[in-house]
Length: 252
Image (cartoon, rainbow, N blue to C red; front, top):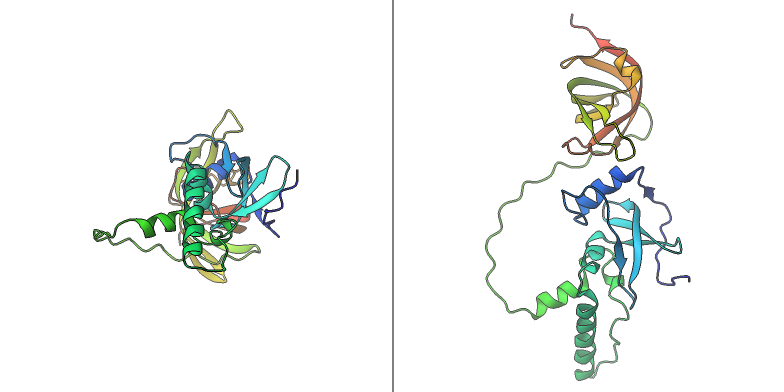
C-alpha cells in the first residue's frame, strides 16, 4: 500500500553501516548511550501505527525513515522519539479534540488540523506544546549555563593536503566482524591548502599507514578527503578517508 502522507527526500545520506546508524540514533536521543544494537521504531501519525527503520538523514535535524513498502519519509528526530511513547496515540487524540472544541466554541470557521506532523517537521511536537500551554504556570528554576558548542566546520568536498600528529593507537568494535577495527587518532590536525585548523581526527590504521611505522608523537603529511564522522566511543568528530602520498615529517 502506498502511503500518501510521506515526504520523500530529494537527496539524503544513507548510513554506511550499523555502527554509524547507532551513533546517529544515540545523538538524536532515539537510543540510549549503552545500546549495542538498534531497535524497532514505529510511525504513529495520520491514525496509523507503522513499523519503520531509520536508514539515513537529510541533515542533523531531519531523519529519513523507511516503511515496509520501501517508501521513504523525512521526519524530525524529536517527533519520531515522541511517537515511541506507549500513550502517544491517546495524547494526540486528546490534543486534537481540545483544538476542535475551542474552535467551535469561538464560532470559528477554521478547521482543526488534520495532522500534527506538518507543524512539527522543523519544530518540537505540537502535542507537547499543547500540554505545556494547559499546564499551570510555575516558576522555573534558573537553567545552568550551557557550554556553547564549537561552530561546525565547513569541510571541503575534494581531496586536500593535510598535516597531523599521532596522538593514540586504539581499536573500536566492528559489529560485522569478529575482530575490532584498528584506528589512529590524530591531534593538531590542519589543512595546509586551503589553511584550516581541524583539531582532532581519526583514520583506519591501514596497511599503507603501518608501512610508515608511526609512533605516538610522529607528525605526518598526506592528501585525503576529510568528513564529519564521529569515532565510536571517542570524542573525535572528523574522519580522514583514504590518506595518500604519506610522508613522515622529520625534526630538523
